[in-house]
Length: 413
Image 1 (cartoon, rainbow, N blue to C red):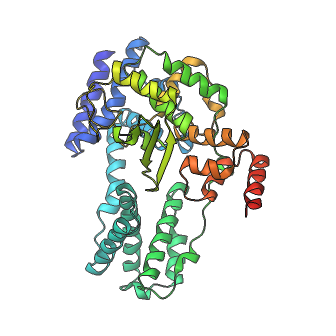
Image 2 (image 1 turned 90 degrees about the vertical axis):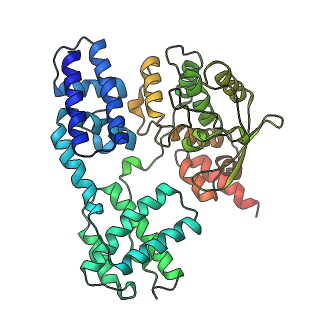
Image 3 (image 1 turned 180 degrees about the vertical axis):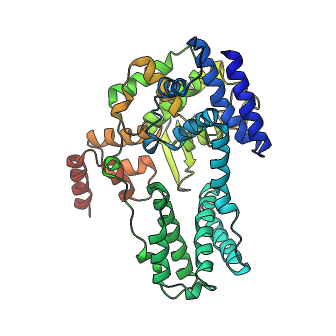
């Protein structure tokens, strides 16, 4: 079996390299292939079938291969990597055709310049993250290309008819349509603000809602949160258990976003005042939170017994990779596999939760604070939200207490 899997992996890798896939893309695919090989060895699987891969995904990651429309972005990446093993030729053809859609677009000098100016505005004025700017670039490039094909050679000549037609012709999946509408709202606001058009066409863009299944945010049960933390605290089966415990403890106790936890630096912690002060990646807004004893102990324990390098520098990241090169965790580092592994070990039924990622700890904390009758203004400050409306979206699971909190806020004015 080992030899068969190795041959399959070597062949698949060879096909990818022959089609000019980047080394980074190939290494990400191989990471899941290697885990699949280990799975086959551990289970004495002697024949390779599609069902073998389906069982691997279900047992290793709690992923149902046939329910991709309900999976997270990271889970879909795992499924895609296994699809490559099932049929590498189909995978390459589908992948290359998907990226050529945008790469093959060549805009006129006018629209190319307009796009560059808009992206510079997003970076310099709106302080958008690099990933956000890349998303906007792809989506707006498609829209400008559509305008050119409709003989709209100047943005001043754009009207509601061509915009409505663009929206009607769009047959993308729901998540993609949501992104398209978001990008167009941002663009139209920019065009109107810069007086490049006389009408702000944002009003034409519909609000695309997700299905009702996603209407309520996922909140973990308190008992499940404590089970996850207790297991990680005493786990000896993983070489990164102390790192995982400290990171998920921060998410559960303070509600920090996953990206902010991964990018936590020594300079963000004031050990004397027992506080954590960061500039949030998503909003670029500051937030100051307490460094509780258990979080402080977890970080120290990680540094003393598990972190590859004990010496700390002011701008060093606290949580780093445990294999060479020993650098900060990548933005694509996912907590999902940690949560699923612990759930399998502790008997937690994750199927009762629609979403199972690190962000659910943030929602859980918000709901817990609401149940403890903490004022919504305090909850909003704890989560680092710019306004209370953002906080309200996290608290819809308890409308009774939410209404009470808003009544208390109204009484203060």
